[in-house]
Length: 305
Image (cartoon, rainbow, N blue to C red):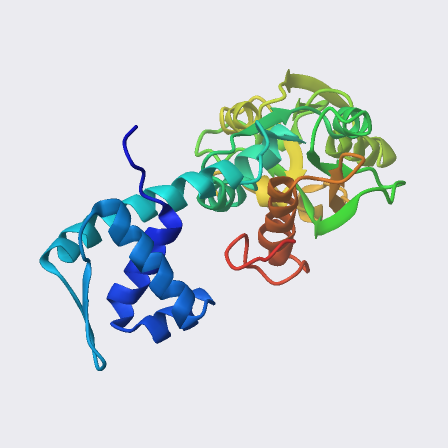
């Protein structure tokens, strides 16, 4: 049977070679000088040659020792890399976060970029749906996190930020036709039923006796943006999701004020894995930091036990 090189013996050998002293090598390894000397002697027995020239004042590598040192470093590096890989804590197959389409498009890109830098091997699955449906599903453990619009009557979840809601319309046209916001009934481009902002907008219009009709419906914020930009209707949306190409409407245009909404984070029941906790922390820092949340900072430098 061929002889094998013991990594403990190689580690002692490398420590002596680096320190040029058995005593200092012992301090580095947490062993006595005598124990290190014994390990080097055993290594020399295995390789069949002297690896050090010693005298009372110094320690020097022999020619064979210089050759062995190169291999010893490589073997120890591979050993340490293999152990680190095998002992690495298991990570999630993926992190699942539910959120309305407009938040996924307008609020999450920076958060996801920070998360990817910290956990490049953990994919993130983003599921877009109405906020009430997402809250119901996360209570069942279907998602790890849900970033949603909180219903005005609810205090569930963790408040991330409070956001104004705006009426928006197409840019003003130079054509002779009257602006779309003057039409009666008012054409609306809306998210599907269940959207909190939709409910607030409809209730506000009915509160002032303004007639309205559904002109366009989509779950996609990009599609709603496009519908308004194309002149299909007026809509209401969180200010953080309003693109600069659209025009805001105010009381001067005959539109009622809309209440602010709360953007809240929900977590699945039970103890979350570390990547999930880091993603939640980034949401609070990056999304909440813009409007009264905690100081921005994202994943960089966050220590989570």
